[in-house]
Length: 128
Image (cartoon, rainbow, N blue to C red; front, side, top):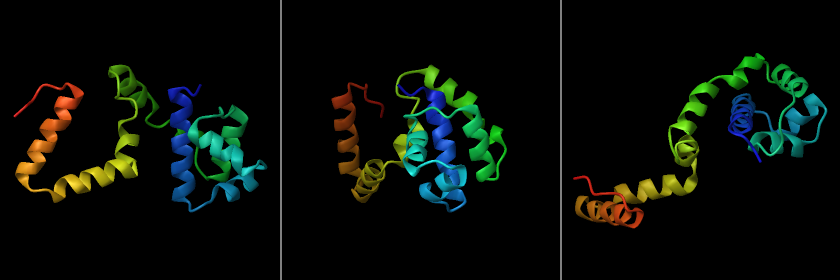
């Protein structure tokens, strides 16, 4: 089971790799592993050892502490309450973006009715 730390390190790994324009295959070749292992690191399925993290940092031309940036805040958000641990991920999903775009294409009255419906389905008290 992936911990929040594993997920955070994986997200940071993916972000840095993409920033440099590297594919998983290219990064894997640089550190001497298969691209499937990079996939597993990025999704948090496999833990990144200290030695491997060092190799990845070297390949990605970044200090090791880059991977830990924002970790304390992520853990605090997770501990703050249910559903708060993956807020950033939720807003980066295609489904969420599509829903928001469709919502704002509606007129004001249908938007209000849709919001009221969603709140009633979730059991959230109405706030007007």
